[in-house]
Image (cartoon, rainbow over the protein chains, first blue to last red):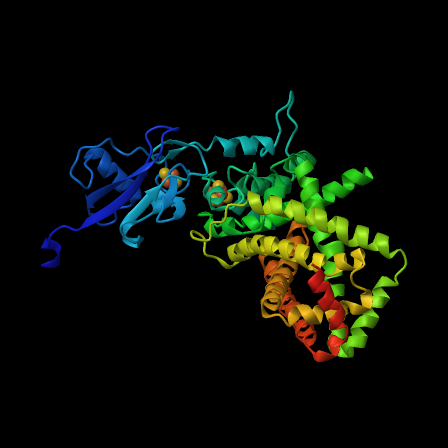
Length: 254
Length: 221
Ligand code: SF4
Ligand code: FES
């Protein structure tokens, strides 16, 4: 019982902040009281409630993005102790201290830890990551998917467009226009679907455009970083295979 | 689209013809280990007796090398290594692939200037190449430069083969990529070993016979 009465622990946070999209970044430190089970989001909430930095000065609360708080929406992705990951799933108990928090700078920073992932949604549009079934009349039920295929395809469908794989990729940067692993894996998903398959060539045409599949350099960081355990490198190699075949087919005109 | 094809060509040329020539080069050098100075000279002469050797060199070596090298430098420039954050084996190989690419490029330019280009200039005959190599590898500084070049080129070749298999969709699943990693790493060790063995053999005094000539060449440049 004596332990619980001991002086409350503090947790130190070093947060990279940025006031505006164009302004330069700086770090600010915070000492927050430790609470059992706290995570990075609850720490940020604590700063919001009481915006005082480690020096004791009043400051502007740190901005961040979050939504589901259960690692399924991807909104709260940030770089925590050097690793891009979801803040809502980052328990302080499992983190080395001081906890260093930065925005995922592969994306444009809107403010503090808030980033703009528009490029990922543009990439999904570019590769047509959907199944077109709209029409003027009911087309009836589509072909069924074999259960075995459904099982691995389901894994790919878990992608939450969080951007961690892009942040981890050394080929996604300001010198390239590589769309990144996530969208390529979605091409595999929709090309595997029995109805989606009918538009497989359109998606392959899209990934063979500039910034598509050729941007991969096989560092394979993405598969190690993905919080959903999506087999991204298998997806990329599969799309390599499909696009190579597609290339020969186009040449031969079959 | 342009990116797709230029990258595919870059990847293909790295294996055919460049990778194939690299292995051929290894075997020619190895003739020095097996057949001594005369064995080496014989295999050099055999290569140069191939029909249309000029075109073989042009389309099998010079142009592919130029394309693969220059485009490769661009690929290396485009990368933003992050080993500090992702200290992983595959990421190391990704980074080393780019570093060894640049090292190999510099090494090849130097090596070609020193050997093949001197033949073109008429400073060296094919029969004297063994002596020329002897002269190079008996100088510690140049020897270490050659060792670095060989290790870099062998790694770049073997690991490049690994990523070629992925880029062309031949090894898709994690298991096949693991197996090909082991095979390619084994290839790296074997190729490096064979090249280095030939290099050491060139230090042998039996290659010295044409050294006087090579020496006078050194004084010329
Ligand atoms: S593939 Fe994984 S890391 Fe990449 S966006 Fe989807 S969930 Fe995030
Ligand atoms: S808030 Fe949705 S993943 Fe963290």
